[in-house]
Length: 313
View 1: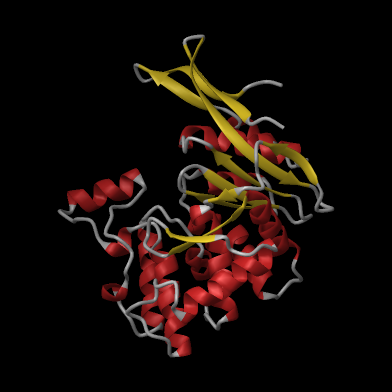
View 2: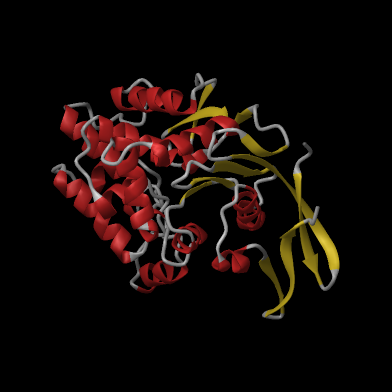
């Protein structure tokens, strides 16, 4: 099937167009929507964080609830996120000087303004991946692994994560790259990502897979932020797990095993959520609150003058 088309409409005119690859599977694991080539290699970016967190839990990471959700997060840098990162580090006898993610400012606008008002600057702990990096350090501490090179692909932690990615996707990792945070990035297919998310939500209660999925679903503001689309989607649909990645990648699954992966081909983030809503609906997952996320407003002079929408079939 051809790629899904997303239109950017301003004042009644189609101003720009994005294209999306979409792979959706039903509760039985069979594809129900395939748009574009979803079997070729993909770069899921932070959409793989639940699998990274799962590998850490299996390796003995002693986190639960909000802090486990934070281990799988691309957080907004709100105060409760930063406090959580400090708790993860302190529990391992470490502090933020051990983090090896890049320095950054919070993604959340108010949190970023607060840092700048207080004459703060970019710091590693403010970077959206600091929860994952803190959890990686905590996993190393539990196992007695070196903490100075935990991002190296040959480190025991990264080897365990790679094995987990292969197990849940059902694919061999075809290539290894470097994610924006400096950690290894494992390339698999979009179909494999959808299978992996399905495995997380269908696992028996109490298993490491379900512990990760349940923590994220119970505390979605910890995996993203209070105003982020992932939080809104999971709050709208009970039992839904959603994780985004850079360059406009989304992955999701629900309690029945319906799952999917979305990639905006040109990395245009404004098209990501409308396509994800379309993919959810294709899987038979819907809720009244999704209507407000099915399109994204375009503004002119501070008022809505158009929208980003999936082209009608």
